[in-house]
Structure formats: C-alpha cells, structure tokens
Length: 115
Length: 115
Picture 1 (cartoon, each protein chain N blue to C red):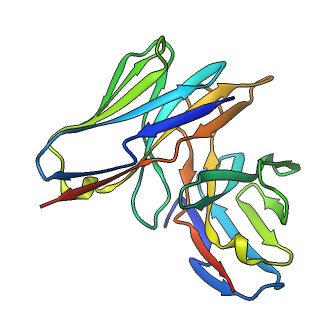
Picture 2 (picture 1 turned 180 degrees about the horizontal axis):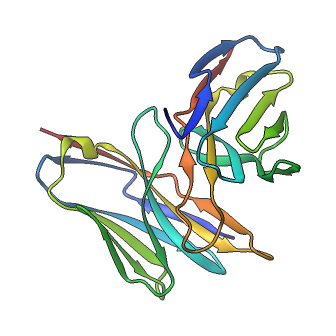
C-alpha cells in the first residue's frame, strides 16, 4: 500500500457542486499538506496542518476548506466548485521541518476537472 | 521577494548522455534546498537535500551542487536512462519564526530522454 493515498484519482464535476478529496497516510507523520499544481504555475500550498487540532491557510485557500479528522486523515473540500479549480491536487506529509528531515511524501494526486 | 528560478524549462537528450539542470534562488533566510523528481501523473519524490554548509551531494547517478554565495544549485544526471524522463523541481526552504519553514517551489525542468 502507498504511504500516502489520495481518493479519487480522477474526478469530473459540475460547476457549483460540492466535492471532497480525501487523503490518508501510513507514515505516522503529524504534518499534512494540500497543494494544487497547474501548468506553468508549479505547486501552490492550499492548506496545511501540523496536528489534529491545527489548521492553517496556505497561499491560495479561498474557495477551499479542510478537515483533519485524525492524524492519518486530511480531507480537502471545494464547497462550490468553479472551472478555475480544475487542477492536479496533491496531498503530502512530512515528519518535521528541520534541515535534516526527509522531505515531503506526496500522494499520487487527484486530477479534478470542473465543467 | 523569495523566488526560485529553474533553467532550462525543458530539455531533450539521448539515452546515455549526461545533463545538468540549474536552479537560481533569492530566498532569505536560507534553510535548505531540495531537488524533487516528478514522473508524469505522480507526486514529486525527493532526490537530495542540501544545507548551507554542503557543496555536493550524490544519490546514485544524480549529483547536486550548491553555491550558497551565488545562490545557485545544479542537478547533474550521469548516463541518463529512459526512466529519467520526468520533471525536476528545485525547492528552497526559508527559515521562519520558531520551527517553521516556508517552501518556495520552482516551476521545474521537464526532461525527456530519448532512445
């Protein structure tokens, strides 16, 4: 099984619909992140969580919300999807932010298309 | 403004050849620099991490260098293989308050290795 699992892998939804992307991890990491990736824009941070009761906005949080249900689970919701939220979404985990940490472990991504 | 710029944007080489990818950054205060490899449709995977005091680090056929004075890093791939075809992303970590770090992601270099 993958260390970081994202579901669904692909999703097409209509404008205005609510959609949830789910992420679970078996790394035992406290820190979890949601990124989106767009061609020409690279990876941009949406939300991050350092603990079950900790939620922080990233650089592009508008239109998104998250829930950290447990240490291993971090879900991303689009309350009312719009076409410019069409992107590749990645969940990631890390064991800390020291100079010697092992970096981020990414899931395989969710390709979301909003029509 | 913290920025990470990578060059070239894309590169095509023949199998067995060497290549070098560049990363220039203006990030302060600097914490560390990582190179990630991202296969098409997959999440990025960490290749190397370099801190301020490190000049060179190898991971198999991948060798990363860091010049903290000129704020430049390079990733050299030796004896390229078809499986090296991917996007290579440079990420610089900036120190923040407390134990926090902020990641500044480059846009990546898309490498295609042809037979």
